[in-house]
Image (cartoon, rainbow, N blue to C red; front, side, top):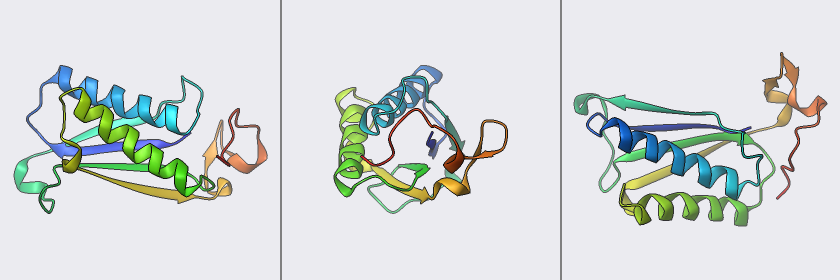
Length: 127
């Protein structure tokens, strides 16, 4: 049930943005062992004068997710994302900065406003 936000400068064509979105979300689903349809993702583009990152970074990926994954799972997540983007000729891995925002289950209101710690999520967070 993570939410993924990809931020970058305006300039890539629609098909490239769709590929980036798909590859990042596929990497998240694979690495976090989520159901295939668990996809909450958005891309935000900025004019160059409103987006500044320390070189070599050009793309910021922020993933908000439930607290509980191991360090090894997080490392796999980072590597899966950047390797997929680079392998597909979209973004060099050194240009991607990934941040995780982890929150306890009770901080998520889902499925009609139910606290996430009170329902069966359909996947394991402790991986």
